[in-house]
Amino acid sequence: EGRGRVLEVGVGTGRIGLSLAPLGIPLVGIDLSRPMLEQLVAKGGGVARLPVAQADATTLPAPEAAFGAGIACHVLHLIPAWRAVLDELVRVVRPGGVLLVSRGTPPRVTGALTEVAWAEIGRPVLPGPTDVAEVDEAARALGLGVRTLDTVVARGRRAPRVAIDGLADRVWGWSWSLTDDEVAGAV
Image (cartoon, rainbow, N blue to C red; front, side, top):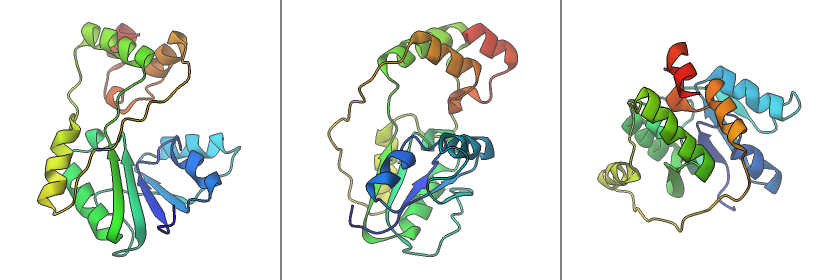
């Protein structure tokens, strides 16, 4: 709050952006995936509730220092050239701005079911970092100050069927490259 425009890389279905925009945070979202952006619009009743663009995070369509903050949550592990994303965020977030990067962990039910699925089909190889320590190291190499924030625990309930249906619908990035047979086996 109070930093000006905020860029969310990998805005996806709006899980973060649609929560921040009504609070007055001037958020702009980008995502490479058109289907994810279409889900964001569907969540908004057919209207994008925040400015969004289909764009590649490794070559952000924004001038230098255009934002006061940047967010990359649950996205770098999906991007082979994830270090280029950090470079771009450093370029478009003005000096003294803030970058929030999270690898995150799935909720208890989803995480447990993911482990069961991976036991069945094998753990997928992700193109980007699987440990935030790797991202921290890259950030330090860029001269950024790095600090770990207190863990934020999301509260709520997700029925196992919702998580299983999410896998069947390939809602998680790690599942996008699975074959139909692998998805069926995991489900």
